[in-house]
Image (tube, rainbow, N blue to C red; front, side, top):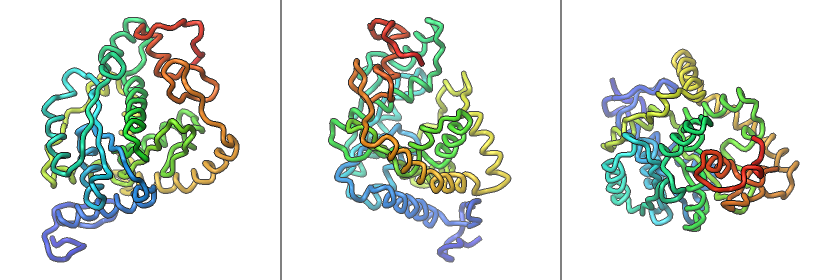
Length: 325
């Protein structure tokens, strides 16, 4: 079969959402073109410095490689966080990530939960179970990763943080927040983020219109040896996200392009609601946590991260001052 784009080379891959058969070169260029289009939309071209939050997986590779294909590498700086998950955070994967970023001319900052928070993710989860709190690993991981990324972004004076969230991630998040009835989180979510505090460095997602299977094939075609092991906490305790993921994949298999359509239509709807939300709060900034100084939700004196550390005994503070959540 001949590639539907160049009409010269043999097609190697089928793109269900477009119905096109593509050769390797045209597939790679298609991903880069779509990432560049999204990058221009979210303002990457205007940023002086962009922090890339990279884990070493296929999405991280695709994020860094596509951005480096059309941006000056001196404007990009990467960071990697070792969460401390037994059998998952592998030293050789970090070395592979460093080698690849070095070839692109991108500096890598390395840190960890243990260095920044004084405990690994495994230790947090174990303490949570021992105290009967039973908070999921994903709650700890997501909250502390966001906190550390934001701190490092401020330290390096980054204008934006770019994450490797792909289309699958975005579609899942929309459905999850609809199920939970979390309107505020839905409004703040989307292609154009809302800055509610000067201590926040805005996060953007250049891969949010790229399917996960596309980032996998992009990394494979470019010869990147990425980590294929899934986080053990997902299989130990399937989350709502895992269940929503399976449901969306069933829909996508029957009607290719459904995930992309979901995200695109959500962006259109959310734009008006975001304007209304910003108008309703005026210039009121988020309060800061009395303990760590990071932004927290309206009506809270202590952020969720510090609250969790106190409850599992990893941070000393009078529990009577804890917010009810």
